[in-house]
Amino acid sequence: MSTLAEIVDKIKVALGSGVSTDEGVLDDAFIANKVHGARAMVISTAARTPARDRIVEASVQTFHPGLLEYDVECDAVRFKCPTVISIDDRHDGFVYVGHVNQMKPFMRIRSNYTALSMHSLFAKEKEIVWDYTAGYQGEFTINIYKNPKLTNLLVKAIFNDPTQVPNYRQDVDQYPIDATLEVELVEMVVNDLMRKFVRMPDTISDSTETFQTGK
Image (cartoon, rainbow, N blue to C red; front, side):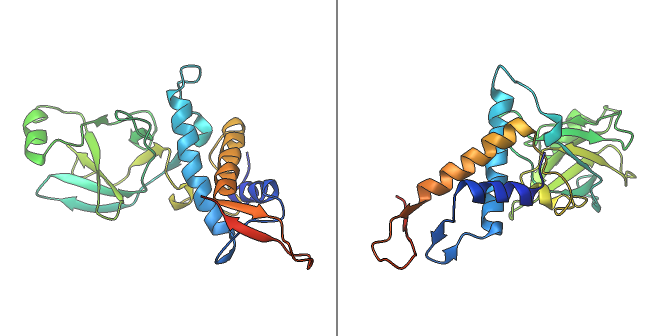
């Protein structure tokens, strides 16, 4: 496994001497953003492939989200959480949401339940239940029901942008993807960039090259 910076370097090497846009040479931040998007795609595809049909543990990150608030009206404890990847219309990147001992996950409810229907359907339910809501800015909030005093939560998930997880150290931590999928990721980003920015031969003998934006 590699760090994010090492993956970006692999992509730059595969692109050769560089690819430019009207604004100049592609910078590392631009390529890193492409890496995040490609990672979500290759992991999602792998999870849906019958020969694989599983979540690779190397892609999963673990963290303790910070307590956001207690919503009295909905009787829910809210925790802030980075967005997770989408696998298909029934599955997403959440692997575990529950007690910090990692041994007791909370039961998940469907996100389209209203507060009223949730209360009526789970009024007799003794176990802690949870789901999440997506805000207008795309941020996630995990909502915990049936335990208003809960202050500590453990989340294991595959996030859209691993660098947004609070305990991720971008300079030293390995980027959360296994070696096989990393190869697919690098190839996907390189091919995407090559399609968008095609290097053309320069007709002027001045040791420079001209780049043309692909269609």
